[in-house]
Image 1 (cartoon, helix red, strand yellow):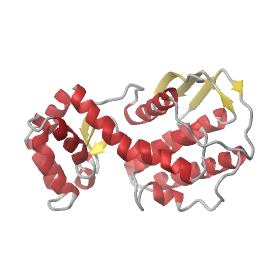
Image 2: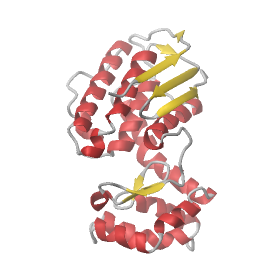
Image 3: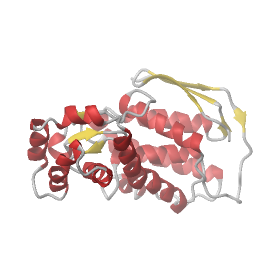
Image 4: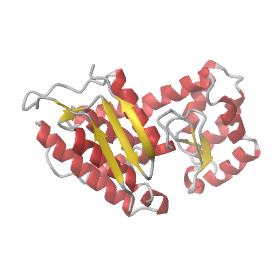
Length: 264
């Protein structure tokens, strides 16, 4: 069983009852949230722009690459489109028709993966992944597909806590959108939309429990990722009613990390 210990120096913060302000994401909060997700995805808080590998379920999703685990048979083509806007002759743009055809079902995902491998997409993405232009394209699609939708969900469900944002962002990135993604979890939550901090805490714990069930009853790869929910559950339990400048994660599954969260 995975053993996880999370420690922090705590500074108590006042509880907010009925007068709830809309959630505003600070640069420091965004950085820490993305570091937490990166730890789950790549065992490091450093964003992996040049990351690329063949998924275990490659026949359905293809290759995964970039900062948010874009997939070659789903959203990956959007990154290449963004690169094309800045440089139509970029070497990665040659793969755009192939990824787009896989995404719209014109060709099978497995067929596209074989072609991508034969044409050296993996080595080329490792070569260009950290290029400024390619990083900017990834950031743009990340904001479009994950960051902005997460902020919209915060607004929709009247959530205004940083750790609620972290939970939703990580879920969006791992599960994706749509009826078989994060919406599948949201539909299972029967409690009312939170109006107080205590109600929000209850809501996010229920969300995590539902997400854990989805992962634990999924395929082998998803079952192996249940510890990320365990970490998030402990983070929310530890920090929801308190703020900490240094967040320490000690996990036999993901490693040991100290993250700095500015209070401003």
